[in-house]
Image 1 (cartoon, rainbow, N blue to C red):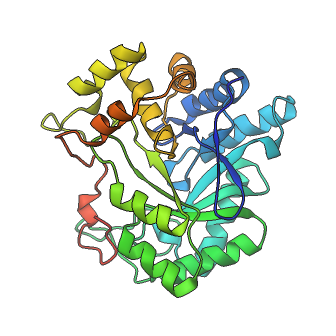
Image 2 (image 1 turned 30 degrees about the vertical axis):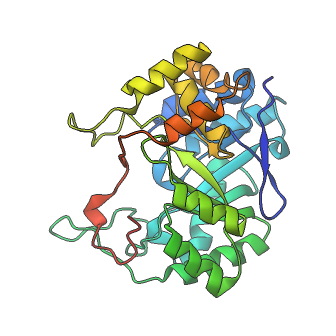
Length: 313
């Protein structure tokens, strides 16, 4: 089995630097993907979220793997995320219990605030008014973070962090609670290198996880006018040099920057291929080239809620 490098988080917990992403994975497909990734490919890190709508399928796969003796719970690193309609203390507890039940586990290794902006509380994950506009809540991000700190004390969550937070928002959390998130999970790739967040993380002891590391080409809102990361000419020049695919170079890009990366796939060959990045490293010159491409682009922008006071971009 592949020996994936691990990071030590600021609370001492070890986190595998390469995991299986499950965003946009259809329920039946994600069940088979998780089973294959863990049993056949050797993954030990699975990234989930309540809002993905497939945690019960992930849980079914995990339960079977545990029962079959393929892996023990303590050998896996499982991440999930608190959705925007669950930012109050009461809803946080409810959401965590729902996720634990769906995944059929007793604890999470990492629990993240999925987005800084809060929506109207409840189990309707996308509460909208008669005009189709999202209904907001005024829960403060610091109060939400304080709730996460309390959840960690229960033992049902080993590490806590955030996702899609900007530097100013992170500074507020840290200055007002003195608790630094273990992870900030953000979109990251050569078109969006997140240098400012990386520098802040180094300063305070917070690591990044890169989502959409391949430029998320299967996004439902993709348009023909957008740059396609996987077709970047420079990327293909570099991939030929290492006899690797463009996707493998993009995954290695993050490992060489000391960033966790969670490529999503439901295809066995690609799941295995995404892990086949441990036998090479990018040269400092190639890393610098990829960090300084002329094209810059954010694929996951949530522009329909850009008027929310806590919108991070």
